[in-house]
Amino acid sequence: ICGKKEINIKLLRRHTNYSAGLSASNAHIVWFWEVLSEFNEENKSKFIRFAWAQERLPSDDDEFIRTHTRLMIKPPSSNKANQDELLPKADTCFFNLELPKYSTKSILREKLLLAITMSLSMNGDDPDSRVDEDNQFDY
Image 1 (cartoon, rainbow, N blue to C red):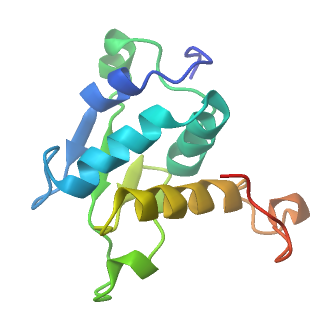
Image 2 (image 1 turned 45 degrees about the vertical axis):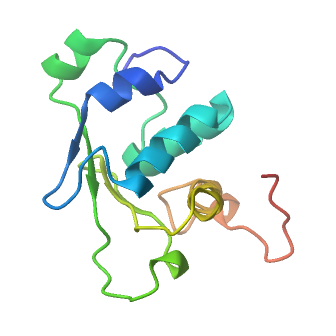
């Protein structure tokens, strides 16, 4: 993908689908878009890398359509009762995001930042992809 370095959240939102039972009007989905829009460029890029293993998005609507690219937001595969305990998960090959139904926007922000910060590499053997337990995150 040769897209622009800046991550255009409005463009991504236009090319997002929701699995059965979810819609753009669900509270946690609204919070997700608000949080993603509030991220700085570095964290937006980390999100794209986490969710799709790419550095950039397609640059415009035509490129999204031409490349058949879309983000799919799905509920988590876990049946855990307390969704606040789960982290978002991604199927990078398919640009799918499993987004738990968090109880607050603040919890969603915390869990999303944790997920995108801890997932710096898809290579589990990469020592640079591991985070020390003592490492502090800058939220």
